[in-house]
Length: 504
Image (cartoon, rainbow, N blue to C red; front, side, top):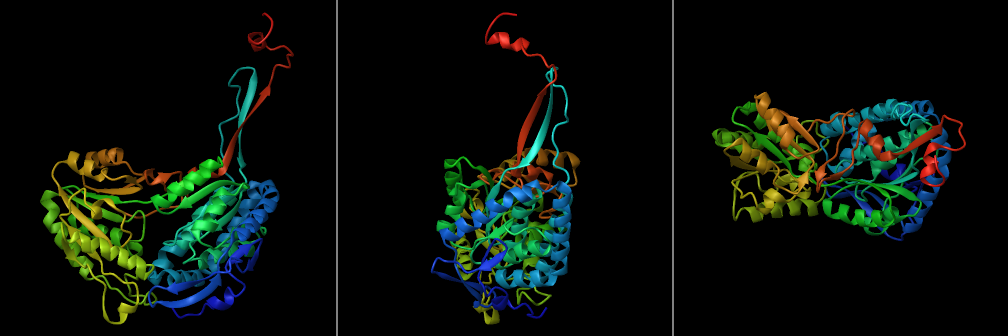
């Protein structure tokens, strides 16, 4: 794929998208979007200020009554057009996503972009299905029914690892339910989020329904979360930052949705298909260079398969091709930045004191040295309570540990603060059923790891947060449930009144 998207020209007016227009930020500070594969600056823009947040929230507030009043069918039609616009611009989205993130173009082309188009098409249909409990006479003297109503302006904050997909996950269920949105993407990867909002306008979604403010989390993000006109906050990011978001949101009694960190276990029982497990572990740990909160990070392998699993994963990792993200043959791109690469390397270097680094464990030299690359890394025999087993690394690092009994394997899988995703590898249906029941995670795969679909919910247990992205379940996050109750008796003095005054 050749560079045919004029980034600096396309966003010449700035990286804030407010009320249907691009504009420059007013903070007085600039920020550079850097290609992590080369270290070169691809776009420089002015960061948002709190005044820009206020303007975006005002635009969303002004647009809310009109958008909320549209019928589900009208919103559905607009979102079907939105999906079509995204599909038409798929090549541009894939190129820009790879440029700002360092993703291999085959990942952007085959996963990020089509997944976002599919999400949009799904919510176009889901907009017509805001379901509630059936109307009925539950008290005998009254008819009750449930309404699902939009709640207002949603302030969302998205991370840098999947900028396009996270924009979709935040925006789509909210606007399908009739809300308006102010989204703050990560300041290092804002470009496809802005393009996503522009595509919404091209599809005929009114100005102000989708707004983007690009600025630093400490000031712009916190101001958005605490804004009095924002009625809900949806945040995806680290657990540490999520705690701060929760503090601000709860102080203003906002609805809160958090999708936080993960440390996904990959549990291989002794009857598993070893080849499938080896391939699944490499794919599941290296997707997006390991910068995925559901990535396989802790492989627990029952002892009879342990040595063969370690050898098989190491061999397969050694064959993974690092290279230019725009080369279709590249398997693994750089990490998002040199700082993130050094953070990942620090985990591995400290682990050498207590574990074996079986594969990788270094940054490549040669032509790749200028980028934020790190080789696929396998670490074996680390203690369960060690840093590399317990902490979220967010890089291409898999730790593998042995276990003996099924009880031990499941206990180890649950032995971290996180609970976002997990997988179990076995040919035994009873083992699989037990694992899916007892592993505490929002998603448990059996004999696979990573695939997601628009129809099914995504969200975690424990320190991985609460609430669901994707699926019809997400409407529970973005709608207000209202009970409406009609008296059917036309009697002035009701029997229950005697509990307050008078006699029967």
